[in-house]
Image 1 (spheres, one colour):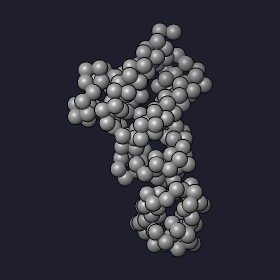
Image 2 (cartoon, one colour):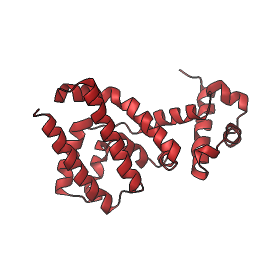
Image 3 (cartoon, one colour):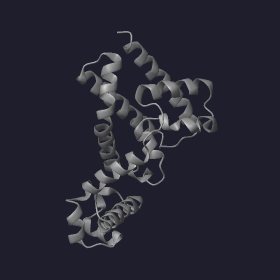
Length: 200
């Protein structure tokens, strides 16, 4: 377990990165600028990180951990949410069920981490981080429930993660009335696909 000073220092660096990303593209952020923002020296930065993408890696971990779902995972969550959306697309009615959404949508809903999805490089980097971290839990589920090979399960999961990400990015990560209507259609589409897999 990291000591208190390390935790404080790394938190300052990560908070500094989030602040800089709210002002500038990742490609324009330097270690020196981050150190100034975080109030640490370069030597201190390099004690904890080898480069800027290491900070993004930790932010991805933090963001995913902060949005861990409490309800049914994976396909079960998709089916549950699709059923709810067939009855209503009213945001207030659906609010209690938003933790059934794919992880990239839940992370982007968190005000603290939303900035990670505004920069093109960081958002793609986040997507791949989410894919790598979540696949460990999802692949065994897909293999067991749908009699898939590991490669088939992996590609279906990749399709779902990247598809959800692309649609939400195209819609500006906004959950307005149009978003709920689109999600209803997409979730129904995915639900039908998974049900068809179960019959193969």
